Image 1: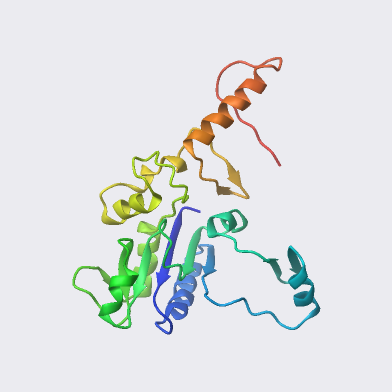
Image 2: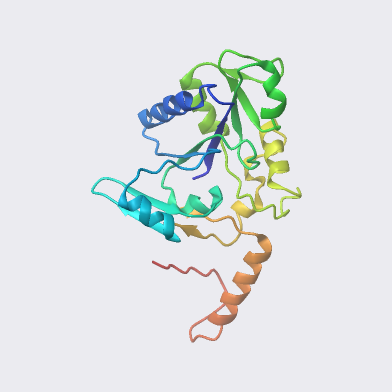
Length: 233
């Protein structure tokens, strides 16, 4: 998964409606979509035996013939959940504070832009336009924008790209000053995937892991320096 986009707007701005339209358009193009929704409210739970068990458990899995749900009774961060997702594109509804993926902003009033645009806005959507941001009003054009300019950074703030934070790099990518490939954590010499999703690699941690593995392998018969490939699972 290397394409991602947030849909940002205040309550009743049309975020969910746009999210559904965009997912439908991408599915029409045979593209698998994973989605995430940020909320300020507790998750609604039905008054069932599963809810009672989940309330007193560290975590709980609920399985039916057609669905699977996993509940953690603690806060998780979106990067931690990406290895569980199987889509080619990630769309999030909300998440105004995310600084490692670009966004589409839906305005109810021009004054809202000051709080919703953090330098990561690719375009606005809806009835309200601005003078200094591109505007999209066609769902096919928006899908094209996601596929051409959507991206996701690992959120490590490792500094290996020359920027202190992933947000600083993301702003440069959105403005067109640097390419998406500027993230060195996404193209390190070591590649680790979990359930098919690449894991962002801090360069320091990468060096530690590489040196440790090479040191252990050097003790085995038949080892010689060169490209190492290890498959697990």
